[in-house]
Length: 465
Ligand code: ZN
Image 1 (cartoon, helix red, strand yellow):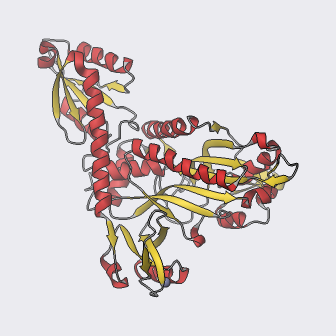
Image 2 (tube, helix red, strand yellow):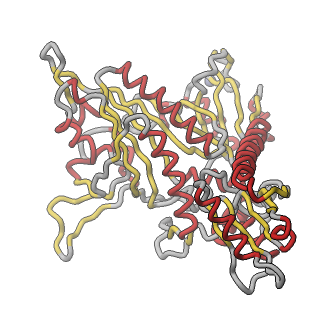
Image 3 (cartoon, helix red, strand yellow):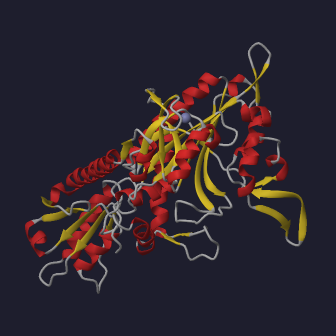
């Protein structure tokens, strides 16, 4: 396998292929096949998302994939922002369509016409809906599995509120939800308010969650957007107030995608392969019986599997013939299973099991009656260690710089005084191919711009995916 540290890009492509997450040989560029193992991991990520939003009274919906040109062509900056990325459907069978249709690049245009029918009075608010569907963007840059693709596995929440203040409360709740999800995925992140020229088309402001992959490039893994009444004015989403007046609703959105899986793969894996956080792992525990002529290790292993399944662990037994235990250990390590259990003659005779954690390969021998308890402890240990390791790398790759030339050697998140002007940002961007991630909402320290010297705040810049 490629060395992860010195050759991250090749390591990433290789591990996705050999671990059976995705197959990119499908004949359309940027549209890859989700293989069973990858799909299970993504479904587990989706479950963490669903659990967080469902517990806060969001409801799941599914809108159609097609949007008419009329729905999309409302005179509005949102549409202009997506113009170059839309796939158009222009024919039905042999007939040209009267109205051309677009494959949704995102679902504002699909949903908000319906919101204007559904929202009538104060009693209909707040409205909190989400869907997990595929969206389509005609990506022209170089594609990369789970990171830059044309068919995107997309979580999108869309809310409507009576006041701007209530929409702001929703933005805060998104941060809380994101905190839960990122902690279950053991992902460190920074929040950046994107500069105006890079905010979501049509939004008042955009906050993005940025993480850092090995090699020092940042990856945007989630965004939340405050729309205010920008969209409701375009799509005529109004409610009747108590005093008989009509008022436009305030709206927000929250978007996540399979980039979460990309971050999990890239951040946690090592030179032996993937390491899945327990909440994401398709298999949390694999039991490997070591063949013996004297005792039935297979039957003993099955008992352990049953115990763990009944306790809610995702547990597989590897009783494939014609493969050595050593081969199986390597295979499951490569596929990132957080813990394995080895059962040999000695374990059967002494009523014990050997538990091995993936991230440090530490072996723990435990009595058979305590396997479930130890499994919880070890999986929690995997989670804690992944979080700690990722946080350490993250911390080591944040660099404050005082002058423009310092950029030459900088990697990761580069933090520098910035006045907020696009002109100064482009000087930073052009010289060293850095992108402007924006300012951190929590960092209000005053700093002089390293380009023009005017007063400003800390801006964050990075090379990014
Ligand atoms: Zn400046």
